[in-house]
Length: 118
Length: 110
Image (cartoon, rainbow over the protein chains, first blue to last red):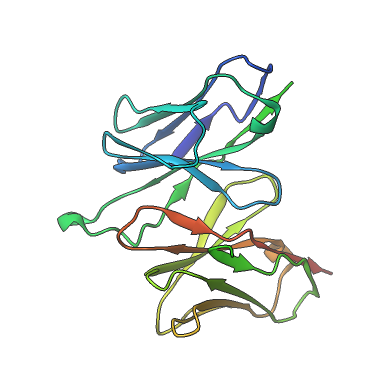
């Protein structure tokens, strides 16, 4: 059974039209991540939430925003998609061990949302 | 210089062959190391963690050389189903951030 679920799997939007991608998890993990992956490139971290604390990567454009209303859900909002934002967007989760130790930061990925911008 | 570097391949090998991938990382403070597998147009999936003493999981063996800052993955008796991209991944324990290599593509032919 899928533990990190991303919807939709495929999303087509128009240039400049806001779009929201969603991610939910049944693992009860406290850390959630959003990555962007373009063809033949490594996944690039956009931001992550540690519990409710939002952590933005320095090179993530302002066009990308995120919301985490509760432990299970996290959203990626692209305010004005450009052609260069067409990519696979991956959500991942990880958890802390008791006592604050990181579980070797093993991350579990959703199947991704492939975004096309017309 | 990239933080995690891998030979992009592709490595094209016959079934049953043994193939090895190497990966180098630039940050000596890196503490956790992994190999992920990614099939075409799918999400990365954890293949194995890499421990200082080296570790084996069936046909897969991972090695870590901290002095030289490189990680290797050995696949024995390659199967057609091993065809995928293998991502080398490192993490500093003080950070939640995983640093991915661009991946090495493996093609196993009949």
